[in-house]
Image (cartoon, rainbow, N blue to C red; front, side, top):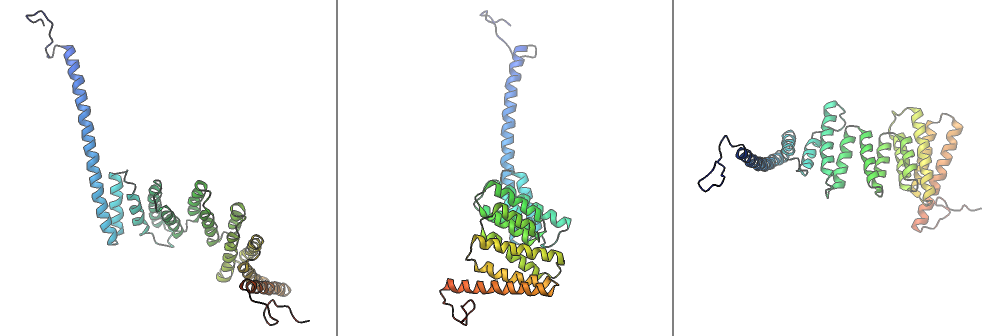
Length: 302
């Protein structure tokens, strides 16, 4: 279209392709901005709703309505996935519903819900990291998932090789679950210089033999032998280990119980007495007690 001055002007109308194209571009930018503003508003709204669910969850948890609390916290993290702090509360709500000693599918599923939440919370390395790690382990142990507890601790040990407590915890789980050969192998691999690790195995071996009469005889004999081996290694690392000597004495007495040969029974009991005497003498020396002719370990008059 030409105006009276002879200059070309463009009028926005359906027939003008150039203007229509420009209008479309301007309209597209406006639409994008509108969508961005709308998305931001929705995100903010979700965060507000998530906070509301958290507040309701906290109230339910304080009333010990753990099922409702769990549902509220699950809703909160769906609304605001970035609220990782909420996973701690979610995990606690699930853990509170786990029944110790119950390995039913429903109970194991609840345990897994708790563990999954705790692991998501741990990704941010919170200040209460160690406490939450303990919750994960205790949750798995409460449903007898020893392998999962060990697997979790193994991952932590690899990530933090300088933290000895993970090795100690793994050995303890092995012995508490009756896996003494595995406990010994693990100690040999990762704690070969730690007298305490071997002492832990020795004491639990005695406890299993002495306190669990349902243990099959062959298993009981094997456990006693592992315990004696562990006590000897503890004393090799720390010779002045009176406690390891005491448990050597006790384990030999257990060995006498399971051996049907009377002659060998006397042999084991004689060794038990020998280690008991050594333990008493060592403790007396450590206390500064001078041996007397009537005290154990004293030199007998010729």
